[in-house]
Length: 143
Length: 103
Image (cartoon, rainbow over all chains, first blue to last red; front, side, top):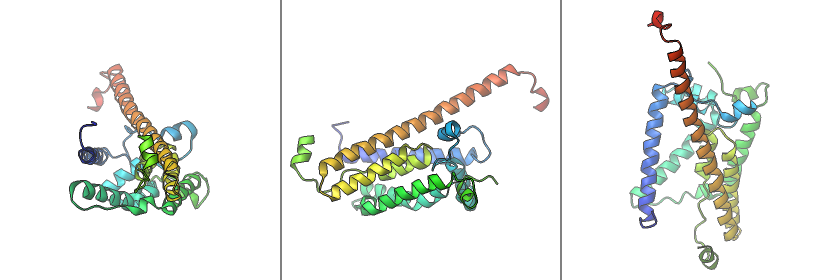
């Protein structure tokens, strides 16, 4: 590993990630997490009964893959909201490793952006566990 | 390696694992990703303040918690699928013949 160049390692990472995303998308498209029970429940939820910031994400992914956007919002609004950021990161990774262009992704090193993000995630974590309207809207919804 | 880092000022901040810890937060269903995000903010704030060694340490901690979250999440997923498959087969064998009516 030490002998190969950085660029080759990064290219390999991008290719592995792309393959994993495609395989996972196929899995969550054909085995719909909204109805199938083969997928694990959140370990934190199973142990503590707390809804973590990721609860509902498997159902949200299946909903997104079936183009049911409103349902994806109801299952996990954080996942849908973070898609532009993840998309930008993926775009930058491909561009930086496979073309001559470079994107510095300065936003991801902005202290205030990261602090805001941490605050949003923590607030989401707390609020979706409050068993009262309107906070219940943030908990993963059944149809 | 560490001496090199201390002697030469860094031009770019070390990897802060922000996107990775967001992914772990959303997909691994565990609070480790949040720890990763907190360390990501430290990487950037310490680098901005000129504390390059502190930024490197925070980068290492961010990597550690993000990786813990990733591998624990993945292990739970794989173990769960194995368990469901094993229990499913066991239940099917135990009740072999009883499903004939439903075929």
